[in-house]
Length: 377
Image (cartoon, rainbow, N blue to C red):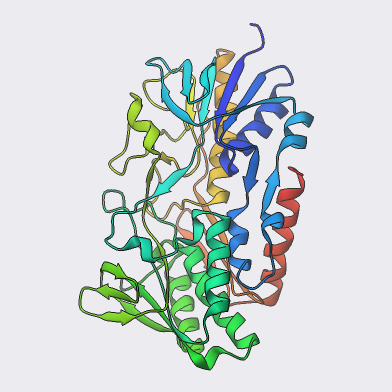
């Protein structure tokens, strides 16, 4: 067959990993990236913005050189829909035809909680990390509140790890600045055991670290609303000068204009092979998909990379008429960082590990970031 036309939607971890994998496996495929900007925003590094350990230029990576090296066409656009057979992606800059499609446009946060505008959502982008930095610098003291929630229709759809990193990192920063005694730090969660997806050992270490640092934890109460100066839980009201809150996740709004199968939480339904059922040569990878797997399966960059590699390989096999039965590995790997130390947490199958905070793990997290971004610079 002639060189296949393959479109990848999204310039995040899953999208770029899919493109790299496609190019490694096929030197002739016509690859097109569709995204609002030709940039990778390295969101795991936003935890270091409040301390000044990272700046915007460190975390926003222009992709022009990468795209040129890998001979990838770029269409600056936002997806708006999809034809019934999946062969035409509709965008606000015109239609893009394809022989194969990988959906990697990520997820979006649910903004349904009353008063959510009074909170900063840390992982919404680099600007959110900068806002936390600026708000914190302007405060002379007060109460700082940290929390996260899930999608009630799909409880697995959450991203809580970065909240732990922000609370520990800000605690460390305030101590370095000699200001910690002027602040009260409060973590809140509707769960009695927050961070359960990290494993029981990790939950124990995290809550123990909070007690050690004098961080108050209000557990087992759902947040009802946020106010300009308070967090209202079911039974407890917490006066607050700064609220960091990570809502649950759902699929992108443009999916409503498609016939793609959706999960209860609003994500594109994907199989263990990352194929979208009912659509030929259409695959999904990353946070925007809902996949079979364990109840601890994370929505994080590492898992997105694993799914994207499998999606790319299976797509190419399918276009060649070969079997497309490779399945992705469900694996959680993260380092919960606190500016000077990191807690390594891993899960695979029925096993898991959670190490105590170690200085070497902080260095390892920084080294991984540098190595990961080098391929796109």
